[in-house]
Structures are given as structure tokens and as C-alpha cells.
Image (cartoon, rainbow, N blue to C red):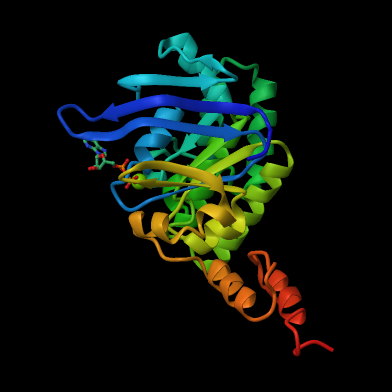
Length: 282
Ligand SMILES: Nc1ncnc2c1ncn2[C@@H]1O[C@H](COP(=O)(O)OP(=O)(O)O)[C@@H](O)[C@H]1O
Ligand SMILES: [Mg+2]
């Protein structure tokens, strides 16, 4: 993995709900600056639980949450500081939105930080623009489409200017155009210095979007470059996932005269590779 700084981490974290069985056991998980990270695993594997531990909504039974290498204290001051470092957007926007209008909802976090009004307004404007919903600022949240509600929920997190933005299944329920627009938005957030972590079931999306991937399986968390982790048949089977198309295609190309073929992540990368197959080019 790259040598970039660890922004936030779970170290040796174990967690279970009340009298339930352990959901996570001795988990080590790191978010590195500038490296997009996809979190995958079957339903009930603990993705949402991990994200809530990472953003301070749940407290580890054992182990530590660290920000910038320092343990986070789960008291008021510690959690307030954490909120400016890590922001979670939950899967269902209706669990997150509560204010009457889009602008009010997005301003809630910055207002709660006690920022001056002008600063709050600037952040709200910036967040609405980043999510491309500036025109919706005065719209009542209950009149928004599902995709617009998702964007509003993400804007609320972005307005906190977190180092790390954690999204729980953000593309679930979006149509293909909505997914593409969201990925473009996340790319521009990444380009302006926000590190994005996303839980998803979509192995093709993860391969295309993520630098690194973590697979949650019964034997624990497995992390590495997305094209490596998502090429491990054993881990994918344990996580109840199939091989991404790009990895399957790379296997095929390697068997067809391109032994060093990298894993194509986009159609244009695939087209470039196809040109190189012996006997098919010019
Ligand atoms: N609030 C809760 N109370 C009790 N058990 C829960 C709660 N939330 C999740 N669980 C259990 O924890 C396990 C992990 O769930 P979750 O983190 O939601 O997984 P995922 O997001 O990967 O589907 C599941 O067995 C689930 O039933
Ligand atoms: Mg979940």
C-alpha cells in the first residue's frame, strides 16, 4: 500500500450489539489520505457497524478509534472534534434529513459548530454547489426526489468540511445517470482534498472507483489495492461476491497473449488493451 498518511483508523476493534454475537472482532482498518476506499461484504457482515464506529456513532467494546494517530475520546469534546475529521452519510437519506428546507438541513452541522453566520452561509453555498443542488436551497426536503434527498444528505456532511467522507451504500437506489453524476461529484470532492470511503455491493463499481478495497468476511477484514483484493476468488467467495468484469477480462487477456495485461477499469482502458492483443491490431 502507499505511504500516504493515515487519517483515521480502527485499531484492534471489537464490537457487538447488546447481548448479540461479535459483529467485528479485532478489526484493523485504516483510511489513508487521498486513497479512495471501497468497503464490501455480504449483508450483515458489519459494513454499517464499521462505518458507525469510524464516525463515532458507536463506541468500540475493545480497541481504539484514532484520528491523526491520536485516540479519540468518546466524550462531547472528542466527538465534536471527530465530526470535523470524519462525516458519515447513512444509507437512507430519510434517516438523516430532518429540517424543513434543503438549505436549513445543510446548515445544521456548521451552525452546531458555533461558526459565525457568514462562515455558515459560505459553507452551505459551497456544499450545495459541490453537490450540484444550489437551485434547491429553498426547496422543502419532503418534496425532493430520492436522488435529490441523497445529494442533500451528502451536502450536509460536506458542509462540515471533513477530511474523510464516509458513505454507506451511496449509489443504492439511484438510476444509472444518478450513479454517474454521484461518482463525478465524488471525484471532484476527492480532487479538492476529501478522502472518500464507500460501502457498496457493486464489485464493478468498486474496481472502477476505488484505489483500495476492504472485504469483510467471517475471517476478518482484508485490505489492499482494489485490483488485487477484488481479484482474489477465495475472498470474494467468502464475501458472497462475484469477480468484477474487469478482473475477468484481465484473466482472459493474459491467456490470449498479453501476459502483463493490467486490470482495465473503464471501457477506454479496455479498448486500449484490446488494441494490443497479438494478431488483432494494425
Ligand atoms: N442496532 C442493532 N442492534 C442489534 N444488532 C444489530 C444492529 N445493527 C446491526 N445489527 C447486527 O449486526 C450485524 C452487522 O450488521 P451491519 O453492520 O448492518 O451489516 P451490513 O451493513 O454489512 O449489512 C448483523 O448481524 C446485524 O443484524
Ligand atoms: Mg449496511
